Structures are given as C-alpha cells and as structure tokens.
Length: 167
Image (cartoon, rainbow, N blue to C red; front, side, top):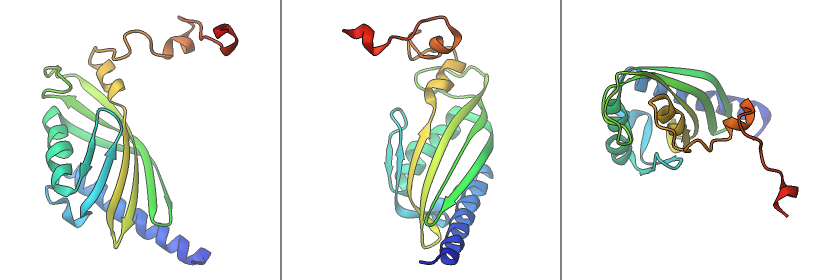
C-alpha cells in the first residue's frame, strides 16, 4: 500500500469511527451498522470482554446507560493509522443507577476512556478499550486503592520507594 492509499484508508477508518460515536451519543440502539456482529470489545479489568454485538449491548451499553444518564461524550483527540483509529476523552454523566455496588448518588462524574478500533469493511471488528473506573469510583467516594494510590507521591503526601531501598 502506498502513502496515498494509506492516508485514504486512515480517513475511511476515522469516518467509520466518528459515525459510530455519533450514533452512541444519539442513543441509537441498532449498533449493527457500526460494528460487525462478531466484533471483540476488550475492556480493562472491571469492564470485561464482550464477544459480539449482542454481548456488547447486554453487558456494556445497557448497564452503562442504566448507571449513568444525561451522558455527554467529549472526545479530546482522534488519531487514525490505516485500519486502526484511536481516541481519548471522557463521558460526562449523572450517576443515576447502581454502579459497582454503589447506589445512585445523583453526582455528575467524568468517565475517562481511551478507545482503539480496527475497522474492516466499514465497520468495527476489534475494540480494545481502557475505561478509568477507579477514577469514577473516587468521584463517588470510594477509593479502590485504599489510600495507597501513587497520586500521594505527586502531592508529596507520601515518599515513593526507590529500588536501592529494597536491598
């Protein structure tokens, strides 16, 4: 593939992803026009892995909608390289339903994410994802790190260990 073909493929990939994001933001229910039926959604720990469109809808899309309403998707940056595209951003939403064992708080939260997509035949086939649920839980009053998060090093509240101190 020459450079011009690569640029064209990258643009087509990005267009497919943007159409999907617009559909999600609009609350569309039929995601088959954006995803292959057998696509793979690979989330970080706490999010799980969804094999296929039915599992994605049942085990990600609908639970997210149940836990967080009044969603606003804020994509900060898109990148595309051939058949792959990526972005980072966050969802601004209201905690309106059960989430990770927490009853609804009514709090407005930011749900940070990074998304990667491989597009095949104009639809998403593979989707590695990282969603920062630890951040969301902290915003809701639950510190999953039990006060041991490394942010304490950044603020000076704790001194980071050094390899030479370990013997």
